[in-house]
Length: 219
Image (cartoon, rainbow, N blue to C red; front, side, top):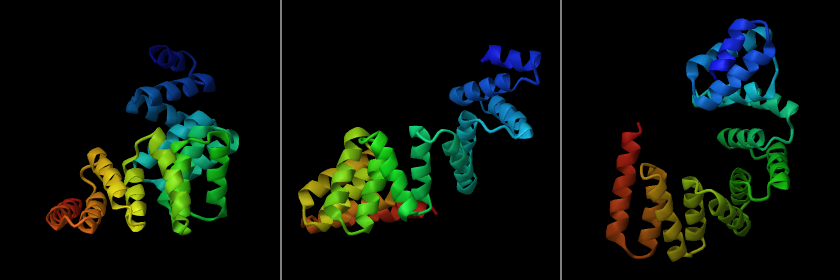
């Protein structure tokens, strides 16, 4: 990255130099250098997909999901087949609870490129669950945890199995969710329901107490 920094000093009007610096800074996690490059690119109103992606990720980290949506939409216009951009847009659809035709088309487009993509299958599982297609939701979530162990995917799978009365299977996935994310109140609540259904009322009560404690701690 030192060479890129030097290039911006030697050639301050070079868009290529600033683009390179921004890309390398983002990959290295160098916040100061990234901000410097992004400020310069914004002054030029430069539209370059890798930096738009960096802006989008930065906005998501800062909780500016509307701004992130704008950056990734523009990046997607420039790079329509880029998997990382499509994954980010699907994550934003999930954040905004978008389940309409556009969101479903995005999921299907991504899975058409990468059938085992974890974000695509997770979003598909959420979509099918909301449509009361629990068997299809289970299948999509199984593909998700088979490729990437998202704690929320394990939890959602556990809840679907619990609703189907498959409590032993549900317990396995609920414990996996908590093992990966022990501070999620919703995951403990899922576990409590399953334990109660299995007749272990004492463990269920303890799980509900933990869920309440986690919920209080997050306020």
